[in-house]
Length: 393
Ligand code: PHB
Image 1 (cartoon, protein in one colour):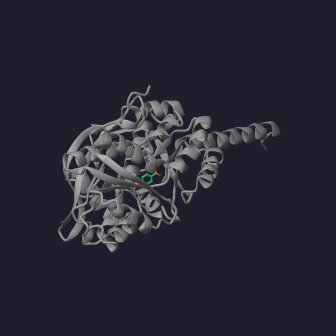
Image 2 (cartoon, helix red, strand yellow; image 1 turned 45 degrees about the horizontal axis):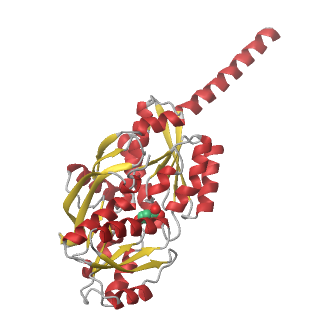
């Protein structure tokens, strides 16, 4: 017979062991909370990002620095109140080591104070307003900023005899960012902006704005709409005959988003935009990415949001490699600073000072390639930093 004393100590040891195993398990799993709009008007962004993040994990495996990566996907419908609630749940209940995604600027801004408070890195994979990275020292971005491409298309317009422009932007932060950076550069170089039109973000009807733009007879309309709205804009633009009136469309490349471009119709041919990614980008890395993404997603063409998600996941993996698996938030953000790699979009890096992305911006023209509409890149501006932060400390 075993003595009670012996049994008790055996029981104690087993309990300790079980507790030990539990905590070792908890440490060995690193959770990533992906907050994206899977429903509502921005759903295409969520779908693209989720697909790209899952593809990355499938390609690279789900173990990094000895830790198992667990992805938790949450739909916020791009509604900031939802984003805040979901981020809180992920941080407090699920104990995630990263929050990532953020389909629109207001969603990223809603979660930023929680990232600061909990010292959890927040990886922006989609939203593009310049100041998001200044909203928390834990924000790091793999998407883009609107000024990055807006100032470059302003320079291109001036050089290509576009002198008179009407601006038309979605009436919220990234639209205002695009407008201000374009206008400053364009008018500074002698261009004239004859009207600034702001279109409501929710279920936009561009028709009345297009009429006003037409009445001003500009050389071009500078347009910013968030990913997902370009098809409607282009349809209404051509229905009202603005293309026939010789008015050009210029802007950041969100309007000729690769997700919608194949169905936009030939009226979009010749549209020139500046952006960080085209599915037609000519590199081995992009060709491999496109083939794998299409294969995993029923032939869906990846857009710039997918690339922001794919690279965001790479940055998370790299940060964990650099910290040797430590999930200390400050250490992870510091590990992300200065990280450089080849993305499907071309070479990119994280600015060590601002935590924002440095990337090539390409000027592209919509053309038919193999019978399909693509943004064909024809000029490259290398290693563009966010102009929105120039001169800031
Ligand atoms: C944003 O809300 O920051 C945003 C969303 C979609 C875009 C660009 C910017 O295409």
